[in-house]
Structures are given as structure tokens and as C-alpha cells.
Image (tube, rainbow, N blue to C red; front, side):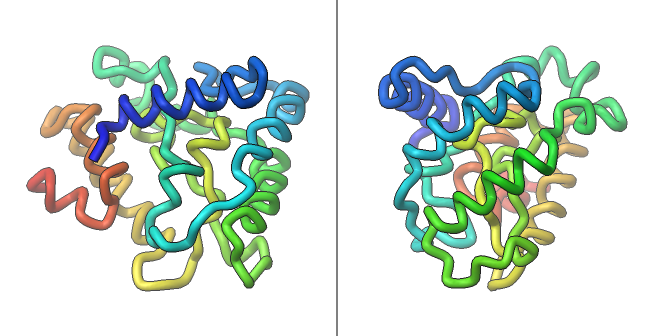
Length: 188
């Protein structure tokens, strides 16, 4: 399985090449106008995503991307600061529009927006990119491993990173590899 950094590099290259210069993965949340402008070209690349990977997203559509402002050396001023994620979280007008498009791309028969969380595959609290569609996907609230269960895993991993029990990169890799086994894989 490729590391998160390899998957991110491949995804970033594909996005740039396929969209004729669209640069995905900005360090800061984009302004509402910039989000709207960047959004259609990026999501056009995700026209057919598979549900076969559930409870994980399709790695071709949603491989996860990182916020370059969050590194092991910056966790003390970013993710480990209470309330920091609110400073980078995209607006619901952006995520709801993306969620509606991605529900179609994933081929979900249930198209009710409230039945999904527009989830950051690599969560903001672990340095995931806030606005890149390659890091966002419509995660079902129902099933054997749900969005609320993933939220609990993300919180445990963040606490472990901030307590210096695991590195940021190890937590990101474990989550992207399989969030349902990430806590056990890291011995937490």
C-alpha cells in the first residue's frame, strides 16, 4: 500500500495535469469565491467513484491530501491548539455543494444530504487539507463502520499525536491505510 505522501503526490500531479493548471491543496482555506471557482474543475475529475471500499472512500477519488501548514514541528501552534480547526474549516455552503456532487459520483441510491457527512478523509485535526475535493467525501452515517465511529478514531489519534505518543505522519498513515484499524495498528 502506498504511503499517504506518495498518494498525495500522485493525486496532486493528476489534478494539476487533468485540470489544466488547477492547483489543489492550498495551505489555507480558500475564500468563498476561490472555492467556488476551483470546485467544479476538481470535482469533474471525480465522475465515477466506487462504493466497493466502504467504509473507506474510493482511493482514486478521495486519496486524502494534507495541509502543508501542519507538520510535526507546527502541531503545537496548529492542531494541538483548542479551536484551531475552526480557523480552517470550509463553509457549509462549499461542503454541501461538494457533498451533493460527490453523492452522485459515488453512485449512492440515497441522495439525502443529511444521511452523509462531508468528511475530511484526513481530518483537519490531523492536518488534512480543508478544501481539496481529494480530501473530502460523502461518508455515510449508516453501515457497519459509520462517520461517528471515524470521528472517535480521529480524536484518539489527535490526542496521541499531541501527547507525543505517535508522530503526525504515523497517525495520518494509519488513518489513510484503514481508519477502522488505525488505533489498534498504532497500539493505542
